[in-house]
Image (tube, rainbow, N blue to C red; front, side):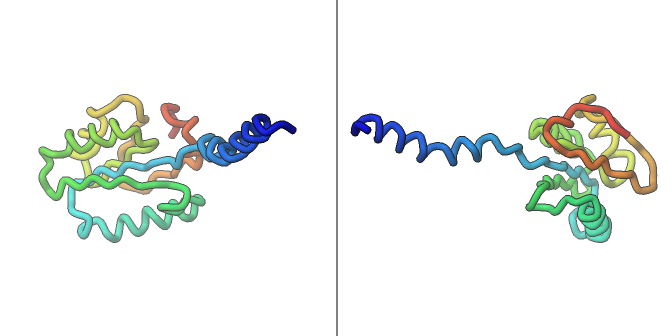
Length: 136
């Protein structure tokens, strides 16, 4: 093998792990839009994380959660919701009742919406390919 061929081969082998890493799917992101401060939502967030764990998702390992807190300033909700939509979250959770749900709904038509007081079943497919598909 000639020196030039060897250097070319070595360069290709050195960059192969970078190419393989670039092909891995991105970690899905859940956006949480909340009216209250984090402290006021601690119990609900704990239950939400437990539900994710039950579905096989662990924050920081295979799912990322982006939090936006209005801290009782409901006028900030539309801006916060728009930011989450710009960040292209896979799922947008509106916590805190009607004001956050209305802000989330106004920010985009990309997500299906659901309203109600009870728990909502999680869709277990949070892959990038599922973004934009409506599911209930």
